[in-house]
Image (cartoon, rainbow over all chains, first blue to last red; front, side, top):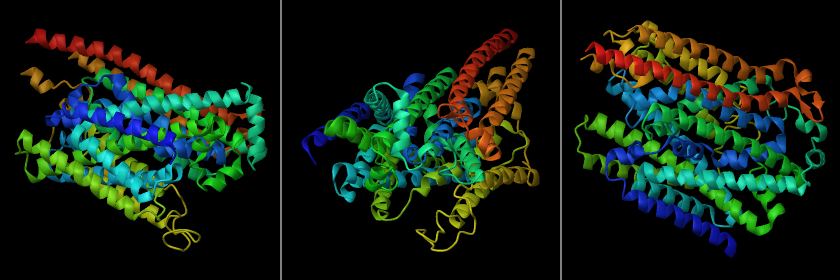
Length: 512
Length: 91
């Protein structure tokens, strides 16, 4: 590793550790640990959401996908962005009003029951850990390629950093690491985009002409259908992306970190503004990579196209810019995995330990200790998994996360908030059927069953890479049938619950 | 309680309208590429085809709908304040 790389890398680590030290002094209570005591402004939280959401898969993967496949790569970015509208309109404010620390709190505000809490906690844990492992594996491989450090060492560094941030600094450190990451990521992609334009003398038609030369697709580059051959695949992917975000626990718990509904709205609008601008820039960088680097060099460096941004940086700005972009990629990964650790921690220590095992009878000090120990254990276990899964293709776990979130968490969240006749049994059946359908369809699909390079070397039984179009309706139907077949025995005041969910006003209390 | 009723029906109508429009607008992108691949892919201005115009429009529309919701939510918040004032006066 040369000196420039080392310098950037050390700067980032020191900067984030200073943040953690500062945050540790402010994380003395559970509310501070889990939610930063609602102290963030909407804009700050929006930046943190963008930092939580834009993973290495977006920064590196999408630029590569656009460079390799043109239009279809861009479709991913659109789905990721559009999903925030659903979050804004239907989910963000009710989650803020109903819950305290976790997603389990939201559902238990309507169905105060241990079984529901179990299921929500397990669902959140599964989603967060399944998302964290591929991020760690990918980052290990990537840091190895970029900085020439051994895979195990890279995973250990990232795993230890994310654990340290969360154990000592809780949500405050996580949020500020994410905010810093957003600023760095946005400025570096903006800088790179400007360099791409200036490289082609600010003439877009020159850039487009070079793209057509650089890719074997030629004129076809700008047409849809290079990555997602069947329209059904495209519709299914788009559906899972649009609906998935509203079921992701690590994004939803961020709405507890602001103080009121207006700030919640501001958070989502800021996040979608940043994410939209970011994806427009990744589009420019994707074109830039196809034009400046070319298909063959990109594929030769790494067949997935993940090295597009670093290669482009090196071609345009030499070793210095490459070192900068590598450091940004590193920050991107640690910010996302830290967000996932805190979400898994909340599910375990708040839902399972505090509410289920201790039945709510723990002191403030015990809760904080439990949260820190859980964060440590979750960080350790995920790192160990990532170390063991080095040679296994785990990228499909990222799509699995979105599909599981959209098929199991989303129906339960939406029906809990908006459907009067939704019942406890409906929640359990909806959650389980969505989860089982997603995992089952993915296991029978071409990600796992593949003659060329699957875990099971045979023809897939189910032919879609993206089973969302089947599994999402199964989750919703499961919740509907469960509620119709096993309605609630006790009548609840839905009107009162609905007003509380939408406004935070408890009309029962107001009326007293 | 009149204000509460008005708040509920306005909010419900707004959410239904905006979400039906959004769902149709967004999902019609992949559907239209599947149904009319030639029409969507033919370059109209330079390399830019309807598929690209529609895609970039999705970003603009997401921001626009977000802004519309922001404005509407502020309006509805005012009704809530009125409702709370009424509740206080009734005590």
